[in-house]
Image (cartoon, rainbow, N blue to C red; front, side, top):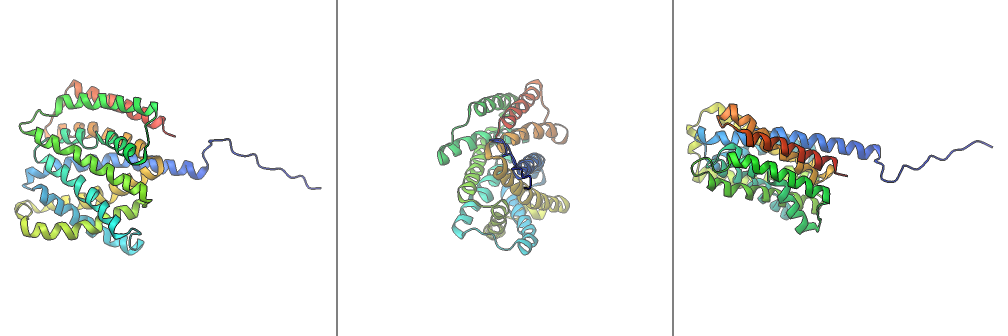
Length: 306
């Protein structure tokens, strides 16, 4: 009689190779968003110095995204999302999030936007997830959020409100984060893939924005230097919409929205550090300490995720 052995079952709770690979992809995408969003915030802050209005930036962003979507559309095909749901996703991710950023940066410095847009995103997502799905953060998650909040507050002490009239932009930035959190909740509830969710925003936003911009705007783009306008179109459309939108959604589907947004809470510190030499917006001891504390909170949130 042949000697047969039954494979021992995997320990309860052990990750399968496929699940482990999915988590690695999720973490890679989440950390990739850090760099793309930091560049997005810095480039958005530079736009007023080029004479570009928030409406100009929206037009460049959506035009670049539409062009970048065309080869993806040929390869992938039409997004598998109903028109009604696609419209909802576009309202929050295509208009609410970026316009709040561009409008805020026309009145406030880069560090303000970094603190109040991606910095508050973990809290916006926790609030929206509680309202939409009844999910209450774990005790470790609460501790992580509290640590992140402490670090964000220290950064805000030195950055928020230190520029004349910046308070107006500071009131706009949180609306962008809330719009992004609602967009992510819709993606999760409807089971939309990362690529489909990103594609619908890229395809639907431009046909709305560009005709309105052609009639009511456009002067800033005409008078601005050509090369910065081209670079803004490429970065805002290809990187900030296609790449960052796909990576954030992919990360959320792989490791969860809470963990993803906790990782992206490093964006304020990275942006503030980069704005120091690039934009002449210096940081003091409190802001640097806040960056270190946010990093600790991010590590707590990530290591505590399942």
